[in-house]
Image 1 (cartoon, one colour):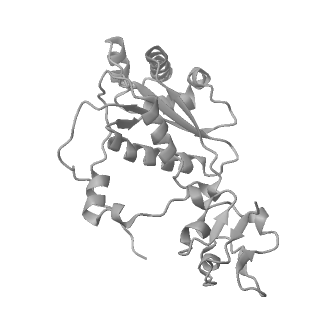
Image 2 (tube, rainbow, N blue to C red; image 1 turned 135 degrees about the vertical axis):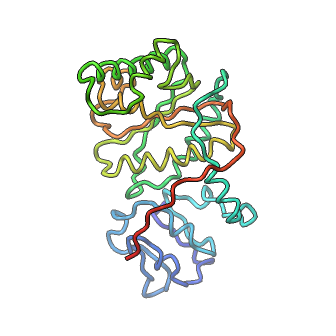
Image 3 (cartoon, helix red, strand yellow; image 1 turned 135 degrees about the horizontal axis):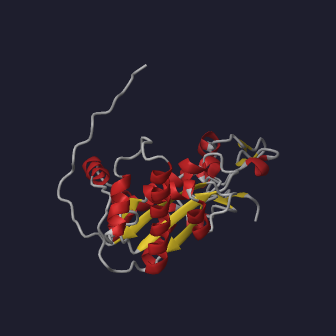
Length: 274
């Protein structure tokens, strides 16, 4: 199959696809008047799928974005402004989870949704690691506590998060403030060549966490573990994160204990209009 195939029986020659191509690599054939790739366009195309998605006549097919795998947007599934606002405002970090495993199928579904988050140049270079073994998660949390202990020991007077001593005290008392006894942990990472790796994976994890409640699940960004991954080599080694994947972030996942009933206020945004 060619990179781009135009069904001439459906194409209306309206140039919609030509006008919407982000890289401007489509043009109208001067003889027949149908859209086509410019010379060398195949080397530039990043398979974003704009051409397939924007054509109202289903006239375009793409080798890497096949129309049969690109379902039509159903207007009946669109949400209202009020629904969107409540949906986004109701997002909460969950720090108490039921002692119940998360089904592999649900985790797979979340990652499948997360892959639709935008990535720079549509490179789609993210990789995922999922941990569900309790002993492994406990060992990983301990490594993060080891990092906190070491950080406190090196310079007790260094200005840091005031709760660092509490983390150690809680762990010694049998309470995990690192991973909160979450039954699952998801880590996504991007390689060096991904110039916007942290942006890419942050967007993907945001998609994942917003979808999670739809499956009855809750999430929490594991910032303390991320600190260990950045500063404590044993933690990176435990996860098998090589130096060629410097961008990463872990997220806790599980069935939430609390169920929130209100939408807390946030600080007013600081906006400079220019």
